[in-house]
Length: 336
Image (cartoon, rainbow, N blue to C red; front, side):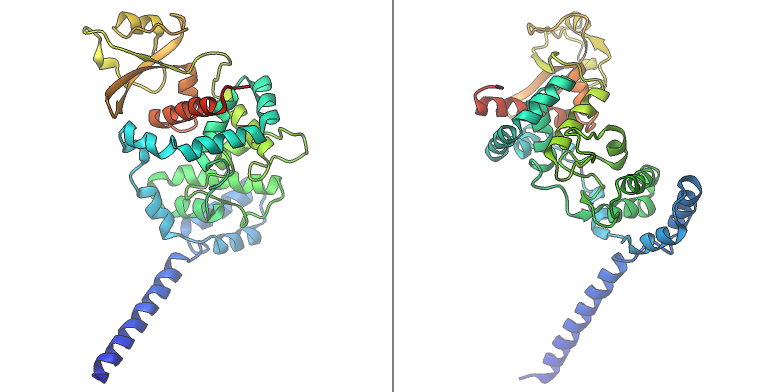
């Protein structure tokens, strides 16, 4: 036996292990010595009357996570063609789980539709796309996610610093320990993955128990998603999107021109994008394309389709929500 080789192997392994430990420690450091974090503490003390000592301890406890920085830099799913993106969300398992979620929460979904005008399938589908009906709400501590991105991701530091501010305000208002809540790598929380600012603006105590709980209370989660939709322009009873077949002389320059409807159904008809669906010529609309397996599809996006994109600024996301909702209705044998 070559004892030198054994010692070298053991030493190399030890050094590698120490390297991993040191690397883990490096990425687990707090933010108490970070200049931006110190300025943030000053701001929160002056603006919102937080206790300085408490915030300094919290900044030390809030860990810098390299995994969060890597996750936010990954290519977005919206870069995929529609036929690949669709496979992620429109699955037999997600449809069946959607039926189960609907059946278990039928009363709350009906109440939300009556109050807000948002149909159950849209609420269920959003929660299904976001967290698999609460099955995957995220494993990162929200305080780690938001502090890491606020103080270590310059490109969106302003946005995440504001979300961190909102997070500390909501945890103070709701008397929640800010180190306990978990969410996505970006700090989104609960069944519907609300960012802290969205929670503070749109989350509701739908069951009237005195708390706004989007983490464990499905009634509050359902009401909050419906309220978010209404606050972003949802119109009850109106269609969402309809397929169109461009005429040979269609003005293709307007395809995918904007998420927000820039035209009307009548104007799109004049530009070569007709529809026979139950829509009126005055309805705001735009036209977009999807790369389906069988070729390019063209769709007319209406006001409610645009509202879904306010949840996530992506046509693919909005289409996934829409189609998942339709598939869940089919699997249930109807909406009632």
